[in-house]
Each structure stands twice: as structure tokens, then as C-alpha cells.
Image (tube, rainbow, N blue to C red; front, side, top):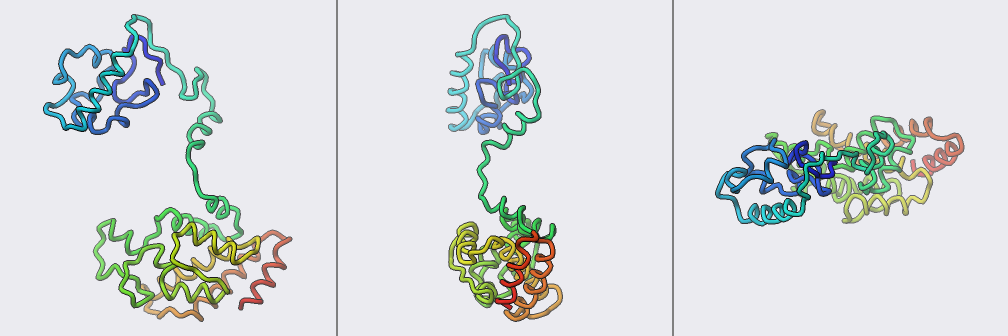
Length: 268
């Protein structure tokens, strides 16, 4: 970021001055800009708005222009050189400070920590990460990507509902049957609320492993129907869950293996 003095080294739109980047802060106004690479000094010396913008501009852009003009008028009039520093307020580079600055403002659900600490295979973890981020290739996502399909409804039920992530794994009657096969109930909540409720219902330290594995099995049942024509059933999903969770146990911490094996035997 730059502490403005003469404004010669600072880009008017792209650099951070007065703790914000105008290109981002005043997006509507920026869309009318004539020169995206103009310096702050040159912009402040412009005699008429038409030198900087394609006229006429929108009402929103006009309000942003007035705010920006007020910021410019508050800058010092000096021939001293601009003073540059890193965004954390120091002239010295630091990878640790850069990392903290880039990550400290992002608040994420605890589920992401639970996910990476689980004993599931890496392919299951990446799959579940996609699910939590809404990046799983459901039919609804393919529709948003403008892919043409005969239908965008859920194939696992007869409700004629679009195949959203929440429907496929929570609201779909088939998914609810699969969850009930391991003794838990899902309702009509959103994904993260459902995840928290499932952890409470399961009440075991490896609940995230169970949730990830069951979601994977539901997904594979759905894929088997679409790509192989195999009709999904609760029994098939339950048997698949037993096989997959047995592999999870092999990767689990030694102290949990027996507990997990006992849990699986009780629910097979």
C-alpha cells in the first residue's frame, strides 16, 4: 500500500491508497474509466470529469465519483516522494505476516477442520470438500455451467425436484433411508446445520468419518444409476457403506480402531 505524497508512483485505480483499492471499492465508476492505468497525480490534476470517464455516467457512478473526489481533495499537496509499505504496515517483507493477513479475515465453518482431520481416503476428503463448497457436479451445477441434459431433476427419487446438493444428500427420500440405515435422522436443514446435528446424533469421536463415508456411498449409488443403469437401493448403499468404512478403520488412529470396529458391527 502507499502513503500518498506526490502521487506519481501510485496507480489511481489499481493501487491501495487511503486503505482501499478504487477499482474494487468503486466498481460502477471504474466501468466508465477512460484510462485504467492512470496515476493518482494525473487523475487529481484532471480539469474535467470527461478527461477521466466516458460521459454520461450512471447515477450510482456519480455518487461514487463524488465520494472519490472528496478523498482526493483530502490528500496532501507536496512534492515529497510516495512512501510504500507492505499491507501490514511495515517496509519489510514477511511470508508469515502475508499469510496471516490473507487468512485472518476469512471465517470458515469448523466442518473443514473436521474434514481434514478424518481418517478417510484423500479422494473422499476432496470429494467432501467439493460438496461443502457447492462444487460437486450435481445436475444443478451442470445446469449453471450451461450443460444440456435431458433432465436436471434428482434421479434417486420421484419428487421431480432439481438435483441440488441439499436435496441429494438431505431432503431426498432415498438419502433419508440411507441415513436411517445407520440410525440417524436428517431433516430439512441446510448442509452445515445438518452436519452438526448428525455429529450430535452419532455421538462418537469419528462421526465425521461416518458422515463422509455415507455421503460418498449415496453419491456412488446416484452415479451407478446414471452411468451403469443400476437402480439404487437402501440395502446396496448400506453394504457399500460397510465396505468403505472398513477401509477407513484401517487408516484410523490405533486408539480408535476397536471402537470403530465395534460401532460398525453394531450397525451392519
